[in-house]
Image (cartoon, rainbow, N blue to C red; front, top):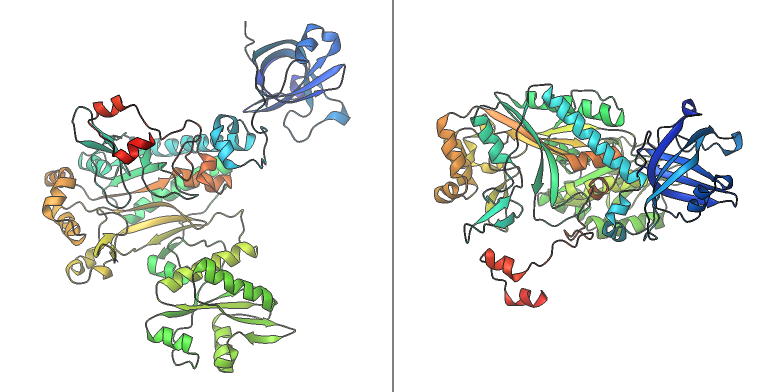
Length: 594
């Protein structure tokens, strides 16, 4: 018969002294001191020290056989620890439980790694035994943070009359951007479903259906190359609203983030969040998702050096490129060797052809790496424009636009991280607005949507869609937190004619548009309200709130960077009979691998 717990392993305190209690959990540590055996019993709530004394007879004999990760039920009496044995590192450190009765529910082999925090074991091994990794306190804290986030999100939207509506996982393939994950249909031979990259079309159809305030927490899927902040399946907070403008959607989102931050990490954040246009972000920070926890804004020297004797600068400006700099406070004493190594890194890691610097310090005065090619007054103006002082360092890159912006943005982040300029305890939210509607893709020789094909252009720019598409601004907006894009949205196109015009701009003719999106165009015939929304990445938000560096830290059963689940071995080959049912034949070279 099992022992049904009365308390968790993180619950007992001095108020329980003298109580008879029952605990269930895993053996975290075991210490045999001869006549007394101490065991740290662990569950997801905490750790309690339990004590087996020799005079307890059979109970002590059983304890002699217990090893780490055994699963136990114990019954015993709560006692106060002596002063010298108090453990301030755990919440139950003032008490211990003297065991009268014990049950071993399950034995354990020696795990492939220790179940403890700050583990140095490689990630591949931890992912293979993820169910053991999930026992570790720091991983469990991430999972509980995520659970708290879900509760906060749902409470916020339900309290504001949003309807939580689920949309299908099996849907029509409408490829645009990343590849779809395809699912063959057995009952419709030769036809495929796609797993949703986003519920975009469905949530717009819900607006047509009159559900004017919708949300869901939904799984999405993209078959793309992975990195630390990407997974093939990811979770997003999907929101759509009718009869709203950008300001109302931003206001609603800011309220959500205020509640989420308060409920999960006990942080009070102020709203409204700062706003910056896409053009300002690129020209100031070199990215559309700037980390504003530190400065080092760009200084544009292009006009200053247009007629410079230093041909690298003047030729770059003449050809339409830019000469840009950043001030690195307090690094003016950096030596020649360190600057040479930095130049090599800029070439190798950032991709720039070279690095120019101006440094100021008391010992050397002002030194410029290309000083013999620049006039003294030009160097001084550069210092003045950067607002640099004695002890500061100015780093300058030259190159074609927009590449030079991106390269200096990477260098800025490198300097900020390596010289301790980023306050890791700070949460800086930022809206980036006024994105271009489309961008030209040289490889495919056509325009592609910067967000998606359903994003509305600014009304004043609609006429430019025919004459100058690159100059059309969209009604799109991204939410950035500490240099990560955590959400993106827009006001949508709700007019059939404008939607067809957008498709045409993207090289999607009427026949293709009807084939891929005919159901949406058809819906627009029957009264579509003005609407817009946003999608927020749950995985990325929780990663940032937990202080993690990878999405895998905050997902219970993540994939590795090859989109594989090392624990269950998926993806895997299937039996030929299953393929026959789906009317699928593998290529010979793939069959040989099976």
